[in-house]
Image (cartoon, rainbow, N blue to C red; front, side):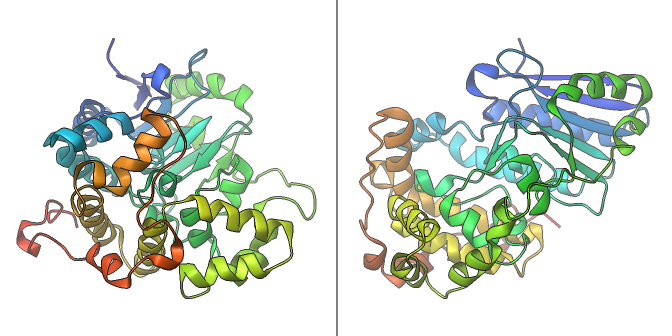
Length: 362
């Protein structure tokens, strides 16, 4: 069966990511199929809007997309498979196309929404994109856990969260729920998961009106709860100039939250923490096309600045998903040991502007 299912009903193109055993993790063929479908629908007058969901293991919902197929990344990097380069060029192009899509776009972000799943959720587009979350939503950009950085536009959409939540979410990879996602500007509408199947069916009967009528108000969490309540602490620590300064200040603090956050950061790739902090702060001043071009440079260096098994990303994936020993051998091993020079090399493009793989993005 195809891993991308697509039909048009009542003027709405409905897409289902159908790789449930892998939590709908994106393959190169899936990226290409999604691109082809969306390009065709954008020029089809019979299609007025688009909706996308992920197939769960037990029901049509329950999982959106766990990201890119990291096992493929690992294998491809070790053998020099050129499809690895194709994957990121085409995935980032798809992310940009969705961001600029000329027709309304609704993403049903139920269950796991991580990495590449965030990239196809639509980002923010002046109200023409609806990112629908539920009480089952588990959203994150956890790439520092595998020696990578929050790509697919992460430097763009995370940096636009309130205060310094962009730095916090990017560096820690913290998983958040649907209400937190809505409050941080990473989602638009909260809907109880029990309503999703009826809502999807209603789209096929009534068209875009079925989701356009959704109430954008969100349930109010108890006073003092939810991630947004931690903004004073997040801003205090994650506005500091360097990763070393952030971790040092957290470790010097006596609160449980600070200690736990510092412990999380100590487990992440020290090198990529430095790269990510720079990415988020540069991305805050960029439009998406430029930010994705920066990311394409970063991902090239993530796999090739130190090639093969020496790559921080290859080592991170090995520890998490291949050998599953959960003991990555980061190099450098400590945050305090990362040279500024190697961080800056990540931002130096290996291509002249006219030859950049994403030079066509506008």
